[in-house]
Length: 339
Image (tube, rainbow, N blue to C red; front, side):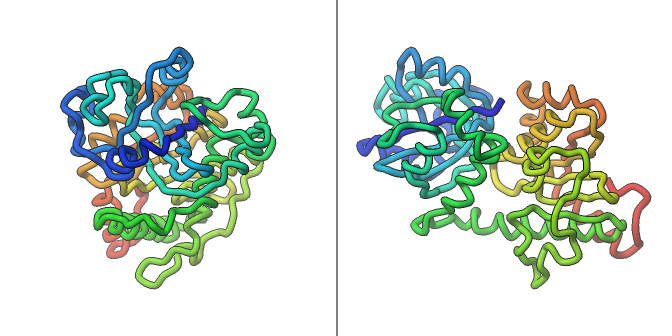
């Protein structure tokens, strides 16, 4: 079950938040060994407390995070690696009490009002988060009256909040969407050239690559008899889907940034709801990220779900493989087996 965490950032801590979350930092020497292979990460933490400890110990990779300050939820992300270490708190923020540490993946600046979140969670008027918390089951149930899943609600918060205009992407961040769209376009063309119906993620239909709209010659919406509305909503955001009529054949999530949680979560959410459906699923990422992708795919959290979906597979594909395959098909025609 996906959890949702609310993380208030006090006015006295905004500067530290900007230094270690808004901007990725080198991995602290005191951090666990499995983090040391990364060059940089976004990292945050919270202080000791019985209930905080309970919430923290329940945190799993990919859990959505909403950051709050002064009347609005100003940022969103996903939990990465969580660990307890007062030395890291002392090293980063000169505060050893900040001992519950977690990295932040899929970071995005948003602007969603406190009132909107309070209403959705069924909280009283005037509610404001004053400490680190995991949304209760009652609050989750209130949220689920309007959404099919917490994951869907989280995606909606990100979409409607949008990135703030004050955010200035780094050159690397500016480059990622271009490469992401290129690989997405190549996958679309490969599907069409092999006579599949192709679906493009709901939020990417109007994107263009070299002047070509991604949704050109693709189907407008998913029509999947036997699938619940909740399942359909999960995969509406998958980057590219190949279909044979109303049967899903291949699904692709393109990951051009440092985090691959959202793609794997979408795949595992799908297989958890329809474990008897057979689909070939792929995480597509740069070759330099292969080790990280495979490591994340093998996390117990994801592995447990995937092991129960005996008819489906989840594989890694590199950007280079996609480009090479697309070029081959352009020159020699359709392949008997694409991937």
